[in-house]
Length: 367
Image (cartoon, rainbow, N blue to C red; front, top):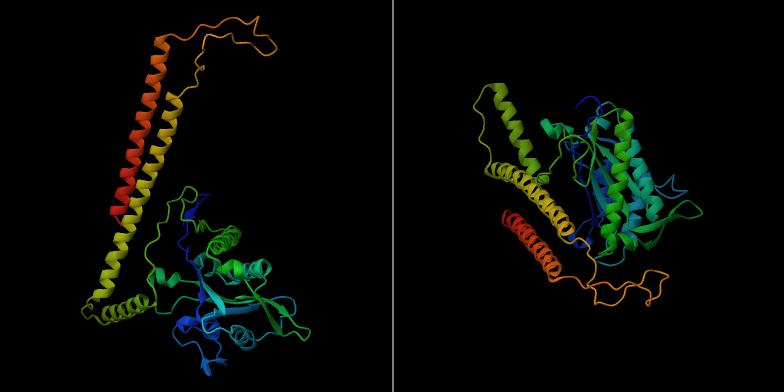
């Protein structure tokens, strides 16, 4: 944290959304039970799901739907979503995990709730869907950066939603723009931009110096954050277990336990990946400078010159050809100078193209 107007890029740049795929044996009822902490009975599977203890507290959750959806229950909404998906490989919804800056949560949860609620209302207005969102606290066993892992879970329907006359959920047509191969990428980017705008507005409101930039570009005058490697649940579980064993050994005065091979290999790979990201960014910056110099050289060596004259009279606007003054053709010296300038410009372009190819090939070899 810095004082004054200096902005620091926040590390809370994780925004991952993906469909709930029935072909992967996934269930919208399961995700709704997991994120809210409420036990839910899945009618299609004939099974009850609930959130296990020790996975972090669920601080708040809400259902966001169309007008008249105030009395919708979790079981009614998500069992209805599973029932509306008739095909064996259909997708009943989507689930999204979003990281929150800890500045919005450590002094109270009102700012984080405003961001999540506003984003889900925006999703409803844009796509006509219903969603359930929940605010999760970090795992109680985590420390260091893991102790700041505040995040939002969203489970949303894959169909446009309305409420019947009695206030019950009605499932309409599928939201094709989110599942289309080309348009889907555009819509996901729109979602990320809306989340970024809302989070940064709340950070300004609470007086924090950090700013979220989901594009991973330099933010203000502060240092740029280069993302590392996403750990995933298995590596996180191994890290928590190793951290707990290390703390217990330090308290009791025993020798520290050895680092598991998989955790050690992950830490080494993450450090190498972060170094490679920094090197790749430097290469791309050098490539950008090379392209800029190509443009400068092209302008410098390709100055506009008068077109060659064939010896005919050149008339000014409003002047007849008979009264125009004859213009002599350019000399051989002038033509030689023009050809020399063109050759120099082509040589410069060829040189900087080669430099750009070298930079790109170095980047590809470093992967």
